[in-house]
Image (tube, rainbow, N blue to C red):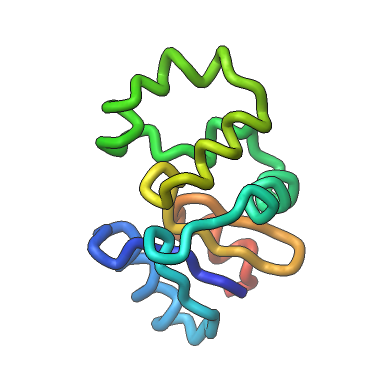
Length: 117
């Protein structure tokens, strides 16, 4: 599994602590220094079963500065994925990527159910 995080993010810190406390080992990846590619995002979107908007960090400064609330509905899926790939801070975090699932954001109950803990 891959745990994508932005280390200063308090939610990412909680998720990392939760993973450690439950003995779940995964590869850590800094989402800003090693941002996801368009192909990764497309795969993760399909694996997550979520609408594309759920991959966006809608509470982030960059999202607001770019006015994406109004722009995203006018963009194609390919354009949105390309935009997400430009900056890891646009992507909702943390992400936990497994072979057959992707968890977006940290919801302990959802993570526990998916991971069987």
